[in-house]
Image (cartoon, rainbow, N blue to C red; front, top):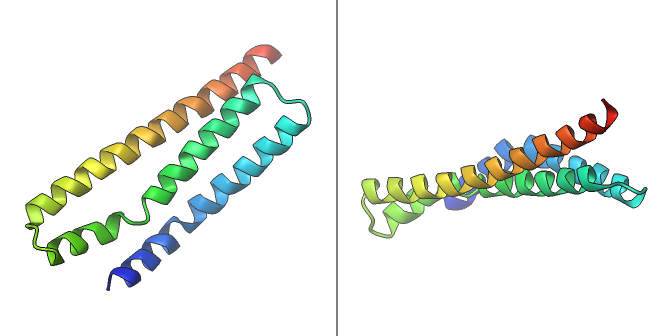
Length: 110
């Protein structure tokens, strides 16, 4: 059952995983062609967002796994809540890096 839940989580996260992987490849290409600080922040933000998307895959399987192990539903929900807070902080750091990268890039052009 846990495997099925993980596969469905992976299918659900697939568009985000593909999008952030493409963003990482584009940022690497921009860095290799002489990119600066903005491109480094773009790469950092994209990597953080990819990690956040990858961490969303096992979230659905945590509750059944913990309940089968003997934990109560309330305990399992608190673990998932803590995991979601951690994942949200990673996503927030990624968004801040992406906003800063675009801010640097467009500040120079103005």
